[in-house]
Length: 200
Image 1 (tube, one colour):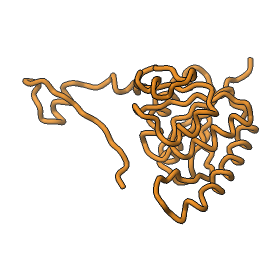
Image 2 (tube, rainbow, N blue to C red):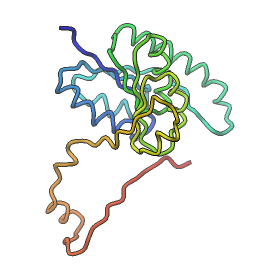
Image 3 (spheres, rainbow, N blue to C red):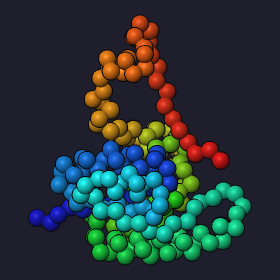
Image 4 (cartoon, rainbow, N blue to C red):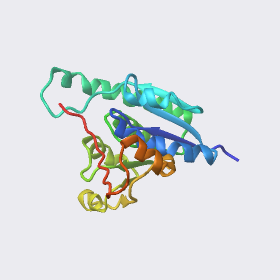
């Protein structure tokens, strides 16, 4: 029986890696061989290279800036180089499917996957699709969304609402330890609000 292989991509911020980190153990458990394409010095490399049985491949990436910068003149060449590198990795590794979490590093990978005729699934965590996923979506076979409203925003038959992807260990927390850590006693309702973003 042929060994099933999945290739993950996504990076730039932890938010573009966390969903992949939640899914990788599932695919490991079910016997898939796992590869990951990310940037040479992004946070995804630091997080993914800690994992056993996941092969990390760094590629050249540009940055999808929305402001004027001299670097914008160089980035198209970096993206082309990254696409060629991703094309070669996909040719050698022969994944059955590619899962993209977004971020600027994912665009060359999704384009290369289309050229190699490997199906790509994109996951969009935000209500409004990010720039990288907007660019990559025409090359993808399927787009999964965290919010049902995002399906309407995308307005295409590729989009499907699946909800949030959550790491299994988040269900294994200890309430008493949480109270001790926060110095709360549970006498009042507790609301936890989480979120982060890049600030420039």
